Image 1 (cartoon, rainbow, N blue to C red):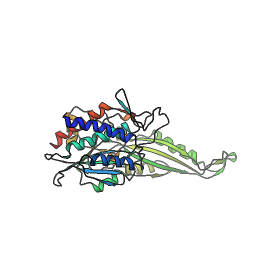
Image 2: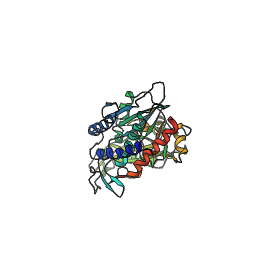
Image 3: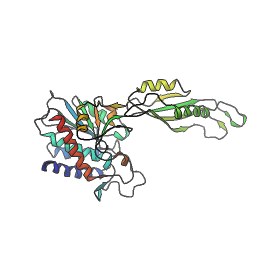
Image 4: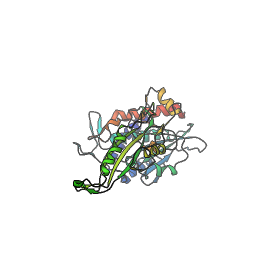
Length: 357
């Protein structure tokens, strides 16, 4: 790596420490958006902003060229109660940088920002490079990447920064949450009156528990349905409930559309079934896409990711890849190795050099 890139690596770690020290819960990311914009503008980058999303284009942007988007998020979840360290104090211990959002997805974000800066002034690129540091990823909010996309030029492909140990997440399960309601008839429990909605719900829940969709993806495996919440409005012990609500978390592979899954489920259960949203669909990028081929040429492995990211909201091919380990995300005393950030920047640059040079 060049001396200039070494400086970018050091600057990236400094920026991550500043981001850790600045709370940025989803929908409350204004201060970190300010930090990111100031960091870029101090290095000669013109930025634009919509909500808490920061957008930038390479200096010699050419509308005749295709464009690759570098995207990651700067919002975080709230720290869980297991923290033993101050989640907002960036502390380095034995090569680990601790702090809320360090691994998910601060390390990816600052690595992509450094990568963008590496290419910003270059004139010999076959692609434009765009950057979007976005909000609300942790809650799949509409004020994040969806708000940013209209301000961006036409995007041909993207790298989405999430902790993948720098391996290639070429596919991603979709997330669909179902609100279900079983209908019965109220009555007195002692006199065996009524029609127990809870029992009806139990029959349906057993179906969700045991049914297996026949199409199994090579990358993402089978669809998965998990009942996660159940409740009745009635709290009296001696009244048969007339209604019972339950929630189903559905992780859908790329072989099914959300619409066909919902239609099939409605034909199998008695409960009323309503999807909360059809936005977070499964996605995949072709194995012969230039970004994937470049990653494979660099010795990275590929896999299908069980978790959902902003990749699900992108109407163009997107590769999820970044430093850090998904297993550390949302854990107490979250951390990323400083060397992972250095390696992340180096790997992003090596991969893009194959594609854009």
